[in-house]
Image (cartoon, rainbow, N blue to C red; front, side, top):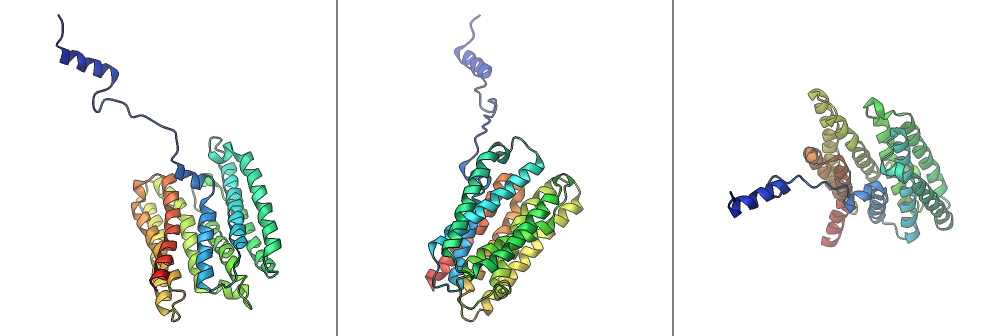
Length: 304
């Protein structure tokens, strides 16, 4: 007996998995292009160059050559790649992006590091070497802590993140501060701008570890502790930035602190919404949180 055409067509669709809701989801291994900003370590130089511009404008640096921005970008990328390669080697995941491309990344980092050194020697004032000595100690301390922190223990190395934030903020700020006459390292590290940016950087650095630690445990007390460990400092940082902005009588630093406030607020929002995103996506969203203050700074400058 011949079946009606409608029944025959439905049977063919069922056999081929074409009916609505029956077709298996198509899986793809292609990574969105914007995720490569983190994989390739481009997040660090992007944030560094942007905040260097904010520091230079806030501190009224009159002479600031383009070589300073290029050198900072190269150094930031070199250190970022070195940290990623070290982390990948310690985790031992052969399928990771860093392990698959470790030879190319090592060679590229050596080239960029050498290029940065040439730019520093040829274009920076002699006072930069005293700044670099302190910066080198901070970077060495960070890598030492990273080397001796075991990723298998599921513990968060807060000291490593503190050094990461301070070292990154120091490297960015010094490239602006070194061009100021009659100023020194002590004046830079005591400034509210440097302290605020350091705290923002260390909280951004610790965020992914805190979120991963919270996801890997079923203990609600641990989850709550991880939540308050990030949300409370972000709240205090935002409040401090607002106070610094209001008390800045000359108003030249106000857009900088409004930028700090924006970054802290966006990280706070992301902290609340983190369960909606994968860890890879969260790392890119942290980058967005650190770049958006540049728009706030620019908007304030244009409106005044």
